[in-house]
Length: 294
Length: 343
Picture (cartoon, each protein chain N blue to C red):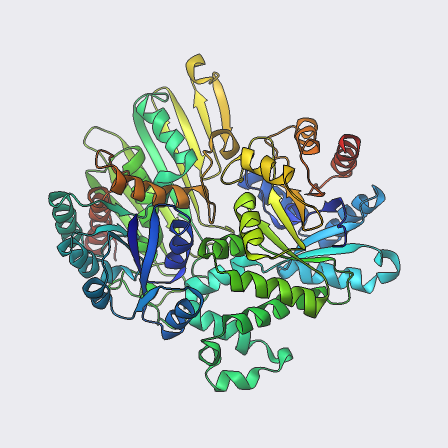
């Protein structure tokens, strides 16, 4: 398995996401309303020596990808770690319309580019009613389209979807997701989860290997189910040629001071860290802390 | 081992399935849905599960210990009644039923039969609101005098043809049943059920047949008062958000699902609270859950349901009785609006 970057720059700060404080999230959302402020922060990260970006396929990500595509000469060596889908888009549509009309809308109505317009006339979702895998592949294609032309290393499935599917314990869906990402996009499949030890055990059971697992990992055990000890143990016994572990939420939304947070992370047997920050100083400091501890 | 059937595989049914399937004492033996697409997917990918398009067939053919009801609310009553006849425990999504009398009847039947009964007012299992409840009960802010309970979401943000159950009050749709019910239940949970409702207003923003926003004032005989302010068409919120502000004789609490602030007139060292403002975040008070899907509270509430089935001594934190109280307040809002809220 190709090794992933050991430091990756995340995106929550750009999109008004903060698990601890909505007020903070709103402030950041205002700050990054002007997309040039987002590019400025990316430049701070690159100046600090970071060469990898994790980005969720939300509406604003389209413009971010377009900018980097247009400036390949400057940014061609940056590695991309997209996560799909943007779950709230689907959740809101499902609330408004119901599940089947949502699938119809997304897969068949606004999707002429995939050449499936004719399928709408044949009954849309009903045509694929017995083939969730085919529907999943079409949804993946729609979500990944915006990253075309960028140097993608891993495609991650968002935790809300990974963990929902994990609860069902359906091997076939995980096998097919990983195979599709590997074969069609020729990159590593990634799974984001808040239940890492449970997911990793299942993947081992199912014989699914060479997967990147991105998971909350912090000193206070926040968003780490079932508990912090099983996380630490799962890493201790991990073979990184089979599973590369990437830590996110390392500061637990700011609840842990950075120094303490990365000291803890350095003691874990993990391969990579994704973090987000919105000022030059924070980026530089965090990068130094991570480097000094590793 | 607890055998469970899930009735209604929409958004909540899908979530509950995933969560409760992780419980080692639970087997999900059957699901019910009216969508043939959903049933064919379930049948194809979940080995050994039984599927039904009619809940009556589920009760006739399966040997169940409990059901999770996630249908449109108008169906909750007949389904729960049938479950009671069969001696089956019920977890039912909010707002429980669409009529307070039906709710009351179900609460009586389930209590009489000593069957576990729970409604999905998930905020009661949120670690922040549980901490706030503890503070209020222990008198940290003294006697409650005034409050404001708000809820905002971006559930309905476009004019749509009114074809789903959400666009019909008879079926349990509308911002009062769907969203305000959470804000009202939080009031009942934290400060108690109001004795009178006044000043109710409802407005439509996008919906054709139901309200999108609601306000009301709650009065209590013991002297406290409060308001609710709810809007399910507010796109400034990324996720559904409850906010509550409670003013008491010794201080005040401001809380949402992510954190709370306490203002105290005098310090309380036993709670590590200073005079003036104190902030507690979710990261300070959360309790880890065995399996996470949509938030700790969603797991906690279903595991609590199973705990109550396994241990008869346990008191359910969100029983049919407490959800009936919430429906009685909802009913009072509808009545007050009809009588006093129109020109």
